[in-house]
Length: 162
Image (cartoon, rainbow, N blue to C red; front, side, top):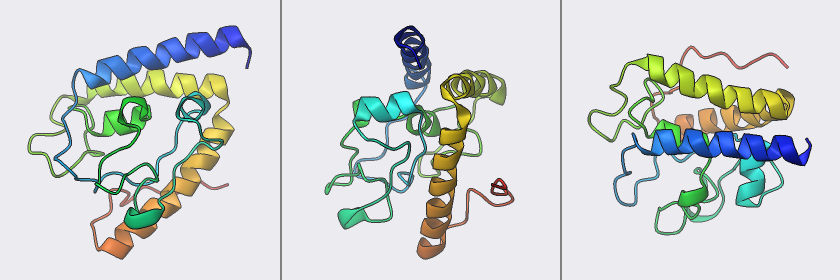
């Protein structure tokens, strides 16, 4: 990807993040139940400083995102990927935190436009690497939910055939 395209995509991602942030709930203090493995764009991974397009859990909170600190809080909160921001927004719909009453109540039309814009960024970067990262996080999240006895957010969502 050339530097001009990268700058355009960074700007587009920053604009999306601002829109979602304006309509996000703050996580309950120390809660990290939703902080599972996450797939992200290459630009987001670069911004965070990792060489892969996904996070995996390690340490004390081994079945959560690797950026969940010992205190249960996100260590990269201001740089967290779009999907983390979106997940805890009023537009999250089915993919929402169930710990916050009223989360995900706004009509999905706006959510569709935001996700479409995010997928456009993914597409311009090259979707195959994002989809491979999604496969890794899908498997890890399913395993996490089963280990913890949670109802799956992925019920009826088939894994893509690779």
